[in-house]
Structure formats: C-alpha cells, structure tokens
Length: 284
Length: 169
Image (cartoon, rainbow over all chains, first blue to last red; front, top):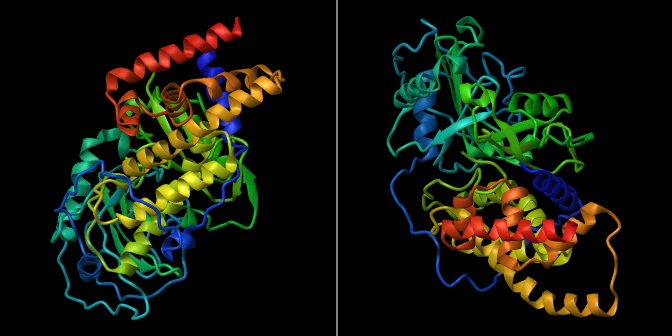
C-alpha cells in the first residue's frame, strides 16, 4: 500500500465515521417505504438448500436428549463465556471425540408463542469464535450429517485450527435455545482432536444480539493495517466482539494477514459488546 | 464468508420461501447487519447524511419487496445503493459545481484536500475508490457491485489515484 492509499483509507474511515445513521426498519416492514423496484434482479433465483428449523431443532434435540427450555440468554458465543454445557442443553455422554451419536427420539416442546424461522445457513467458528466459513444445511440433513461436516471442516483447517482446545475442555455439546427476542439459535459444538466448531444461525451474529452488554459505550479502535491477531486482541480489549471475514485467525496464512477494512470505522461509539466486522488480506 | 462489509454476512444463502413472520425475521437480521455500513458507504459517495439515509432506505425497501425472489440480497443491496447514489450524485454534481464557483473554499487539512478530490471524481472512479479503500472489496466484488467488467476497475482506481497524486503535488 502506498502512502497515498494509506492516507486515503484513513481519510475515508474518518469521514465515514461522521455519517449520521438513521435506521427505520419499521417503515419498511409496515410497507410505508414502498418504492419502485429495480428493473431487473441482478441475481437469479436459486432453489434447493432449505432447512426448516423445526426439523433441525427436532433432530438436534432428539440427539442431544435435551429437554427444551426457553431461556433468556442472548447469543453470547465467545470463548470465555460459552459454557461447556450451555443453558438448556445436555452434553453428550460417552467419548468426547467425534464418535457416532445415537439419536434419541425426544419430542420438542416448542413454546407456542415463538415463531420458528427457517435455518438456511450456518456459521462455523473457530475456538476464538470468529467465523471461519459457512455453508448451507441441505434440506433433510440431520445432526449426524452436521457432525460429519464439522469433522470435515476441522480437518480442512488443519492442526492450527484445532490446537488450542483440549478435548476435556470442550466436550461435545448439542444444544438449541430460544432467545428472549424470539430468535432461534441452534448450535452444535463438535470436538475434533482438541478443537471444536460451533454451528449457529445467522441470528446469533446480528448486531442486536451482539449488543448484549449495551449499557456502556466504547469507541471503536482503528485496526486498519494491523495484523489479524493484533486487531482481534485490540478489539477484544476494547470490549468488542469480532466478526472477521477473509482469513481464519488460526489459518497458517492468517499469520501474515492484515486488516484491510473495518466496520464500524474507527472513532465511532458503539455499545460494549457490539460486533466489529473487518476484512483482511494477505499482502503480496 | 460474511461481514458487514462488502459482500457480507447475508449474501449467499438460498432464501427459502417462508411465512411472513419468517421473512420479517430474516430481513430484520439482514437490515441490522447491513444498514449502518451501507449508509456510511453511501455517505462517502453522495456527501450528505440525508441523501445517504434515503438511498439506503429505498434500497432496503427494494430488497424487502423481493426478499424471496433474489438469491443473494447482499450484492443486490450493494447494487441498489450504488444506483441510488449514482442518481443522487448526478443531480448534486451540477449544484456543487455551481456552489464551488460561487463560493470557493480551501480545504483545511491534507485529509480534507484528499476527500475533496475524491468528491470531485467521476462517480465510477469515486465508487471504486470508496469500495476498495473504505470497504476493502476486491476488484471482482467492486465490478459486481457496479455492474461492470472486472477489467474496468483497475484503470478507474489507477486514474483516480493519479488525479489525487496530481492534486497533491
């Protein structure tokens, strides 16, 4: 990056921080913001991978053998606070490695007043709880298949990906829960040779659930140009959560990765616990 | 991979046709994940808070209307916002040129000078610069957002940087 490009990035970040953001979601949901549509959708409709939450949750709960409970815990998926046995769930018995799981047919007692959205995507996260990749769950796939996918993912990210967690620190846990705002969260923790993966719905990553400790504001630090690991540390020290895209933190190539862009920009005040997204690149 | 930057956390999934409640929940997630970043980006392109918020709100409404018929709402939103910004910029260009002629101002800092030059770039060059150096998007992603070929982006960025260098001399 040249000096001019660095100055430009910095200037744009500063100017972007001056924007006054005025969201008005209700106007759209209520139809008050009806406007002419773009002439043509740029993207064709694709069908296929669809999964109904009830089917997934039923299967998950069936395997986990958990008795469903509605809990007030908002999504709080970080390495320090994720319980080895999440609220409203039960850990697997038997081997803590990725051994076959025997499904148990336990019906789910879904609360009637909670809508059951579809799950069409999952996020896989490292033990640092930064997303490293994601894919869709095919219609009809069950938790057994998900566990297999966890295994594949863990393998594909190599030993670095799994090195920090010991098996006994992260036992296999399968859980599902209802958040207080009616958003579903379904997850699987899979142990693979000392590491684990977390599978969550997108709802768990939205800003509303990121702002779980929103009583206090913090200033977003400037992490542009900083190495990936350093950026993560800086944001965590500021009390923020990281949504990283680009290079997985524990990927070997991630050691050279630097932050190319961040959102929100540096200097903006956000609630403690808010999520900060950034993109990384490995310099040539 | 997703984020609130560029093609992001809500881009790629298939959208199952769900109930109205399901649609609203999904869209609410999407809106919260994308809105603020899009407004900041639009602000850099149009230079006005009001216009940036309006453009993004209209684009979001367009996405909501087509939630179950568009495959990747993130890129769709990117394009809708950029098209909106282009329209606003077109109207504002004439006004701003006139204002500059009537009331010339000198930027106070080098950063302001830089941003002033960015604001005067042709829209495509400005958008390429903002998407590259603010949003960190790749040339391919920028090309998709601007509905042009990838080969156009490099020259646009180069030309814009050349203009900026020249102004700084």
